Amino acid sequence: MYQNEKTISEKEIYKGRVVHLTCDEVELENGYKTLREVIHHPGGVCIVALDEDENVYFVKQFRYPFKTALMEIPAGKLEYGEDHLECGRRELKEEIGATAEKMTYLGCIYPTVAYDTEIIHMYMAEGLDFGEQHLDEGEFLDVTKMPLEEAYKMVMENKLPDAKTTVAILKTYLIKKGM
Image (cartoon, rainbow, N blue to C red; front, side, top):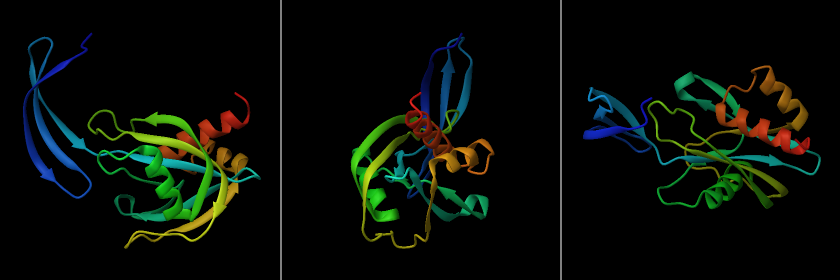
C-alpha cells in the first residue's frame, strides 16, 4: 500500500486570481516516476444560516462552469492566511446581510482530493440578525429561505447538487435531530 510520493520537481503552468496550477513530477514508493497536476486553492468557508424557526438561507447565483444558476448556502473564498471563522462571518454579512450570535464549526471537507488542495470549512450560524447585503462587485445573487426539513429532502432527492451545501445541510440536519 502506497502512503507517500516524493516530489522531484514542480512546474508552474498557470497562476490566476483564484487558482494556481502546477505539474509536479513525483516518485512513488516503488521507484516509478509520474506526473501530478495540482490545482492550488486557498480554500473556503460555507455557512448554514439557520433562523429561530429552523429555516435555512440560500443564495442562488449563476455558476459559469455549469452555465446555470445553482442554489447554495452562503460561502466564500479564504484569503491566504485568513482565519476561517472570520471569513465565514464576513461571507454571511456580504451574501445574506446577516450576523450570527453563534457559529458552530461543522468540520471541513476536501471537495476534490485527486488534484485540488482546496479545503472548505463548514459552519452552522444561529442567532441571526439581519441588515443589508454587501455583495462584491460583479456578484449577483438572490436570497431565499426554506425549512431545514425541506432542504434535507432536496439534498436526498439530488436537487441541491453543490457538494459543500449537501454535506453542510446533512450535518446540520443530523445535529438538529440529535444524532
